[in-house]
Length: 358
Length: 275
Image (cartoon, rainbow over all chains, first blue to last red; front, side):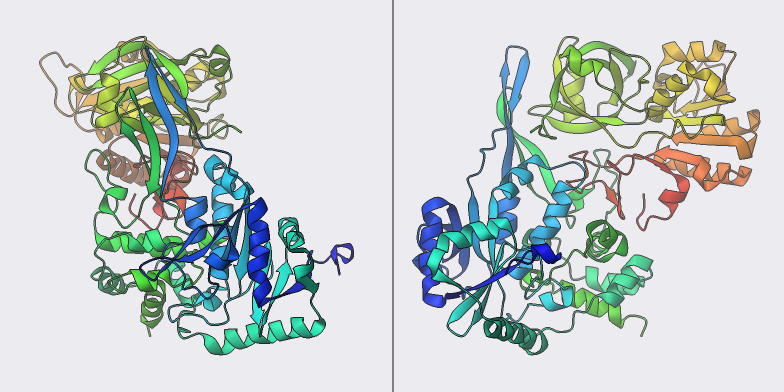
């Protein structure tokens, strides 16, 4: 049923057999560029261009780099090419208009991260590179029913499912996937599947709701990361220096946390080439590097690890940023838990902050 | 779709040597229409590109009331600024902007104005000083206090003489260390406070200079009874994009590029990081 008439969110619910998902992807790939989770030699998964649904596995382990961030805000991007002609330098933005792309099978935490990135890159000054890619993008996200050990999206209110913001959202129930359609883009690609989809029955929907509820309540192994207290203390700026000292003593300044974080957006801009010819590129940067704020005079407003660890968690958790962004800067994907060799990840930091003053 | 990161071409129209390491560049967009439509507020900044050397922000030192060109005053300290110093009249640079909030020149109409500048902190203030000269009737008493390390480090020397002659403002200058020709004050900028009178509740202070100067000037102004929101400064931070995206210039939840660079002391004081 189309509910738009009665003022509710536009939402249709369909169901597709597990085996038919492959055929659906095949059909989409005939028309669009499809990126899906492909197993690579190391045993990890990477989102790659696929021609057929056979190439992917939807039981994949989340890649360490968020597929959404890698697609919309690549680790290195040529912003413009320049060339000197006579006395004048011509600079041209050479971003190709991206063909319609379906990111198939991203996990819901990454979808939530994308909604965060949307607000960041498109509010105020519009980031043209992001905008162009985003306009071409359609997402199919998976509701996780078996969270990994490092997952805590449920604490971040960013998963395992979403009520809005998706194009198509898939939830596995027994031998089928319930497919919720959340946008016109979503409807477009479900239409491509044609008769592979049937209308979902109320029983299917109830089953789906039950599975999601059970996942939320029973399946998470890291239920320790409730943020509210950390948010309060970070905002009030009343965390004792000893806590920061302890946390910072474990930081080696490698920047991994920023690179793997799907909501980290800081970048560096540099010219590669000579004054006659070259490229202006942007690359991911990290506030955990001392050079991030170092001025040419040598003055550095954040000279020590502690300043930078504070900075990172202020950005992720303070209420002022939440007010700006509508959500805090963590979606509970757990990547920092895996990446940080010092163990100063979001759950650990929240735990440390909660513990102080008790 | 216009790309916010793509600079437009501008030409260097004039270069003035200010000090041993500082030059003033007069710039104008090559496209006349772009130059005509280039409206900015005193206190805003531009991003200047020299491809191959990079891009950096510079506060405009001219008032938007003076049309057809804009100027920046630059000390050669890094890769880009040294490359800029090597350019000649007629050479081309890339410009994006204007960016930032600018000075609250409308809000302070009718008030007495105090400018306190140190060294190369004068150029951004000059933008507002010129604006006020050009709209003199809108403002009360104007006092300008300026200091530098030595007489050789003073910028806009050719203009400071005119300021001294003006009867509708008060202008005082000091240097930390004088030389045989220096007949004026010697000492840090705050010594000049003793030589002028202010109607403190009706005065707004604009302060720009090295961090150590700002610190002592603010202390003195607060002692004199200035309200925190009536002490206004313009900040600098390492910056890339100028449009609130690259993240480098963030202080707490404020971005110097889009929430600043102009802040009053009350705003700065409450930020959770050192400024």
